Image 1 (cartoon, rainbow, N blue to C red):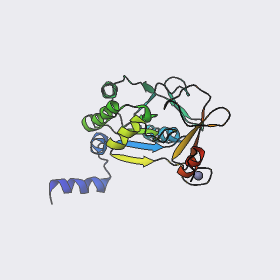
Image 2 (image 1 turned 180 degrees about the vertical axis):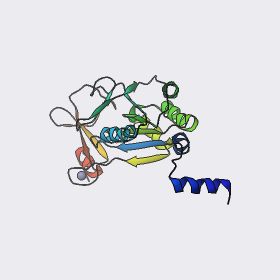
Image 3 (image 1 turned 120 degrees about the vertical axis):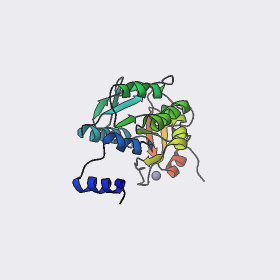
Image 4 (image 1 turned 30 degrees about the vertical axis):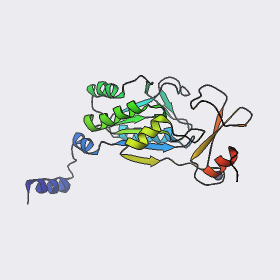
Length: 220
Ligand SMILES: [Zn+2]
């Protein structure tokens, strides 16, 4: 029996936990949790962060600066829970931000909301943080915009993430919703416009692809 196997048996026998640092170094991955609008991404993020903190581990939360629904530097869920977060914009160097944060103490996990607003360079910065700083990074974001096109951050995450998970919600017909339509204040579906629109009276409705096509006028 090698010393390594003996130590593993001993550890299992006495339930000696593997040191947290060693565990995370082995497990650090870049995750992309994607969905359409109103699927509860922020709720899932806040719950996951809470699970770490409940066990005495530190987490670091980041969200896009242009999403001010919850106020500057907060992640809020529609079911009423929220937590403070640092913010990033298109000029932020996320690798440097994470290095600075890690110099203040160990992190069990980094959580990033509104990850669709990351640019490709920033997703690479996160990938380097996972590989080189050995910190797990969980990104939460929309996959496609109201025209059915990938957001830049989501395209890069689909390319680079180690693991992807879908946060699901349903269309009014009961099928899984994967698309979203943008509506004006009268409920008229908007087919054109900027990918990111902040502060207007638009609302978003998540639909399955067939009902999204119907709403966009793509009928057989
Ligand atoms: Zn449907």
